[in-house]
Length: 288
Image (tube, rainbow, N blue to C red; front, side, top):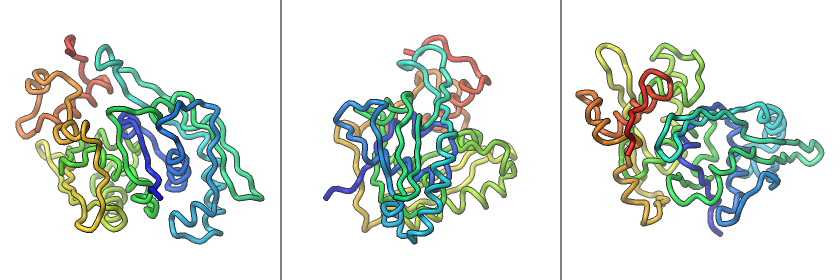
């Protein structure tokens, strides 16, 4: 039997949101049920049980019952912020929406049933390009929501072996909202536990280092690859070239003109996009 797979549009992988680990487990267990080959409507109901969560995560059933109910109650309030520019042109729009439109917990059965929000569905269904895929089992036993997010951000660039992430962008993506403003606290409570769990519980190994601009740490450099005994989830052949050399979101000439001395093109592209969407920089007039 084929392992349950997660398919997410890259825009959703890089969106700004915060979910607890149990909220992540509910959402991912439901995403794994989405039939990516058939149209999805906002009326489709997905159900996950405490028994399924306990088996998937190798935890006690009583613990799963307790956490599932609390997580389902919070999940309805959770929002996700997406940044996008239609067809790569025009001014980027900020779209704030909810993960789910309805969620219910059946106490006597220990199950959660939900319907995904209407605006989330296009990021989960009938994806043909610019998406990330991985097995649900890759993250099922992680106990850090940050570890799950880090794994997705690395798997998105699977095959490149390196991803440079700007710290301000990471804080925004994880919705840290002023927490861990000191880099030492960020390392202790976010980066180090997340990296440790990716190394221990996923098919990837990962190391990281920091990069400074002047005296300030501004970027984290992640280097990663498949563990020798793991079975990699490779992108489709038509997408391998794109993953090996990610397309730039901004015109190459613009990125080359504005990149820093020690920045690669992909890193500069990400930094410039962050500055544009946060109002620090104007969108270039010509995007072709």
